[in-house]
Image (cartoon, rainbow, N blue to C red; front, side, top):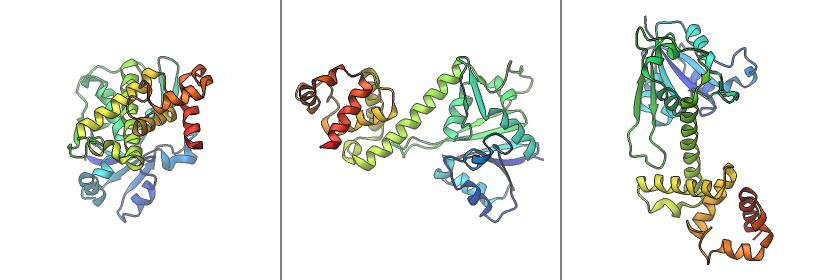
Length: 282
């Protein structure tokens, strides 16, 4: 018998356990951090829930763009415990540089970029007892008119097994997750900009908004910025002083440098943060 599951990201849906149990349906839930060193924060980890095929929770996910950003659907003839045990292999990951970290594979955005970085022949190993992993890739927040992209991952019979541990990421996977992080960061920047500086993007079309965000990120990185706070300051200065504030001869930034000559000696991260502190001081 084929069973249906939702895999919920507890960071994106921080009331996930209350929401699931509050539905008043006969469900089974396993927070995947159960019994691990992260048991104390299991409500913020990946949460696997087995649902009846007629579940209102499943219908809510199928119809709800908000929930589609927080959960994906799995199908399997295996038990809840077997699926949970398989997914538990991905709680933490390693890479070729020796890094070790928690992996938020239940975030549909991350899931999509991660699974897409493999050839289809890898899905038999990656999915294990899962017969289908249906992942909704929601449109970026700056382009809400775009449709959700439904991505279905299914094992290919008789595929060769992946060598090594499933939670070890090769370069292709690391690069894919970097792209997922970049998109997520742009989404956060967009949300902040529309709240604090709505006039900057309000006159742009959806495609132009995405291009503006990407170009400002590229400009900030070319200037030497890596830290999220520093990049956010860069965008704020672009909103207040213009996209070319760092190079325009008559910009307030150049006037600040003239008043603060020692700032020229600071590395880019410290310089932009010193500029921000002076702006806040008024």
